[in-house]
Image (tube, rainbow, N blue to C red):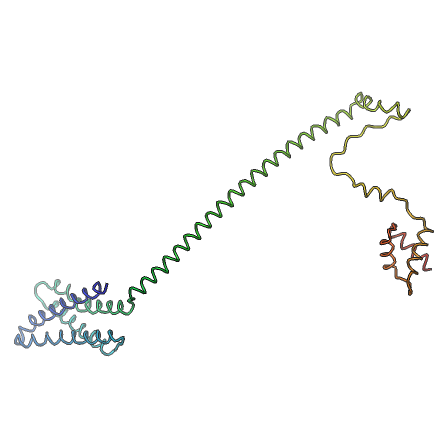
Length: 287
C-alpha cells in the first residue's frame, strides 16, 4: 500500500530533476560554459533533493520543520520558474516546454500527499478491527431492519384479521337489526289493523268481562330496571313518623348531631325520604 503513493512521487521527482538539469544546460550553455550550466542545474536539483531528504527524515521521526518545508518549496518553485522562463524564450516548441514546466511543483505535491498518507496510515491489526466493527454495525442494522419488517408484516396481518372480523360482526348485526325491524314492522301493522286488533284483544273478554285492553307492542330496547320500580312503589313515611326518626337520630348523641350527620345516618339506616321532606322534618324537630 505504501508503494501506491511513494512510487509516483519518486518517478515524478526523477523526471523533474532530469528535465530541470537538461533545460539549465541547454539554456545557460549558450551563455556560459556548459560545466557552469551543469553545476547550476545540479545545484538546483541537489538543493531540491537535499531538502526533500531532510523532510522525509523528520517525517520518519514524527516531526516537522516549517523552515525546511519552505526551503524545499522554494527550490521547487525555482525549478518550475526555470522551466517556464526557458519555455517563454524558446524559439521552437515553446508550448511543449511550457506544458512540462509544472513537473517540479507536481513532484512536491505528490510528496505532500505521501506524507499525509503516512500520517494517517494504520496497521493491519487496526484495519482489521475497524472492518470488524463496521461489519458488526452492518449486521446489527440488517437484523434491526429485518425485525422491523417482520413486526410490520405481523401487525398488518393482525389488523387485517381484526378488520375482517369486525366486518363480519357488523354484517351479522346489520342482518339482525334488519330482521328485528321487519318483525317490529309486522307487529305494528298487526296492532294498527282494526280487524286484527279486535281478534287479538277478544281473548281477554271471558277473563275480564267488559274490559278490552289494548294490545301493546313488545319492548324493543333497554327496559327499566326492576330495582328502580320497587323503590318507587315503596310506601313513603308519614310526616309524624319522619319527625320521630329524625329526632331520634339527632338526639342519639350529645351534643346533638348536625343536619348533614343526621341525614347521612338516616340514609345509612335504610330509611327513604326526599331531601325536601327530610329538611322540612329537621326544621320541625329543631324548632
